[in-house]
Length: 277
Image (cartoon, rainbow, N blue to C red; front, side, top):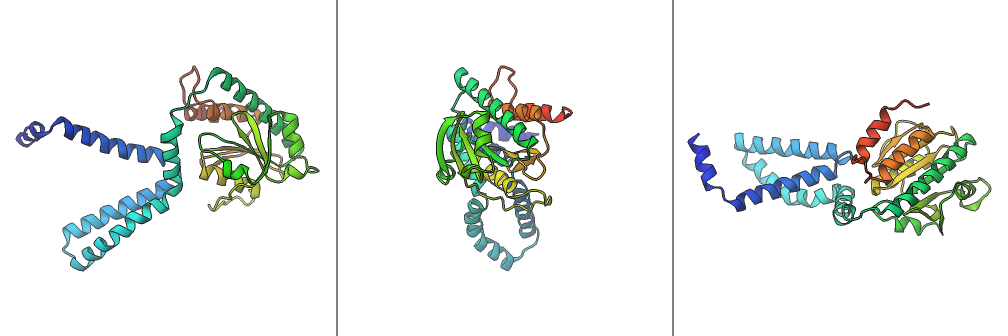
């Protein structure tokens, strides 16, 4: 008890600020990598560092301690390489994500775009027409749109179904939607390198997962083989959803600030519990 009182008397407001800043830094890091493939890596590295620290402190191993001290600089260089996608996304969110607010006019345009995409996805699913529609959010996709054909047009169901028609040149690839407008078509998206156990997931699904791993985009996929609608976000895929649920999830992700005061993840969990028809 005396030691605690002595410690409290010696703590100044700068020490408290220092502790809060360190705590905020760790909170920001864990918040940035939540739900990503970096979480198992962080757990593994943390467990390894704790084990090494305990081993070198409890047992005097001079050679092993020297080896760890020599490898530590290489580990500090390797961590940014391992977590490059997560660090890039976190920095982009810090610089852009929380500074932008949607106006009422922007919200109405995005809602209109969502309805057009949902209608087109339902139409193409009934006819087993393959499609890949990518919504750009805070992370720019300019390098990917430059691989396709620039269109810059209003998003309509007729335009989307025409682009993905088998008899058109632009049907192979993805369309990118930015701020409620169709920016480009026939765009090349990066394929995910993760192992997919389901062999029914083809190149469109791998591209949809890949672009959401590299950016905070949201992608809608219509399977050409099964005529099923899927949605990907943050490297994860939600399969076999109907148009009602598709609209709810797109609204949750693309219109995060609504009068309900609920975030996109909360509304996504709510829609996920709703039975599909």
